[in-house]
Image 1 (cartoon, rainbow, N blue to C red):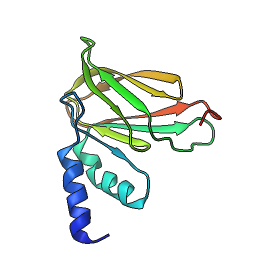
Image 2: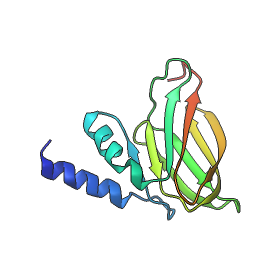
Image 3: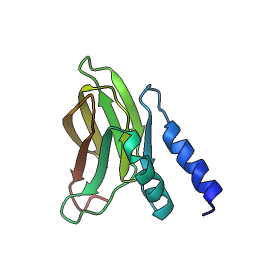
Length: 128
């Protein structure tokens, strides 16, 4: 990939795609170029989600993700384009739900004023 194309992809990732919500995010990680772009953008996002199959660790894409604040307002609702999703959220407590093939996993994340949080959603094997 040319340096110009890589720069354009990185600029788009840093700008953050948005859904119907206001939280900037990027997702992907399928293929070397997408993974490299996300690795470069890592520090620009404070919430890092990974989607994988329990046991084998096989990565999953197409996972529906919903992030809600403490008032149950949706701050992000999207479908991942790959096994990684990075979001930039204000400091606070959030409920994060990930859904794939009818299985819904939910966790609570507290995003600090500085730093980041990571979470791996591990879905039941054999459903994909």
